Image (cartoon, rainbow, N blue to C red):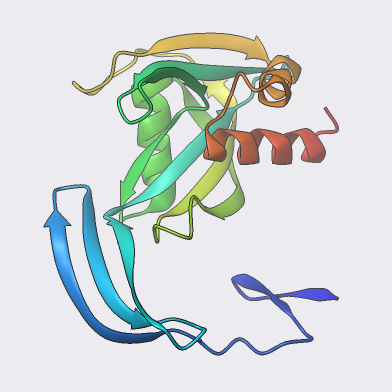
Length: 194
């Protein structure tokens, strides 16, 4: 049985004490976006080992804009890390300590030219919690107004307007593989009975 308690779901049948013991830690890499820390640990089995953690200096933000006719916007770009092209919902990063919603509004405008009068946070997500502490937030943006994009110099984006059901079909067919996009689009599909 699960019950929502604050920020996390807890199983009421077990204990949640931290089974890891940190012996030492060393920051081994730092840039403006991430830091990498290596820990010497005693793992849950009682053995010594190492554990690496990637710390993100921004919150991950995903936005699903939806207009009154049931269309949404996807953004396509070549992802350096994957060495392949990726279709995604509009997304970006928001500085920790700054307004998450204001950052989401900025990202939507930058990548699509859209602004929205109605914003609904639909999800909090951890993107890959075995390797990173990255925390993400996903919004639905509605009551849209069109404007000009403001791409960053690292972005070469293609924007595609599609029916929401087509974006869901892209998730189901594997054409969209980005975790934040998949989670957000499937949640919207359930919320809106698409």
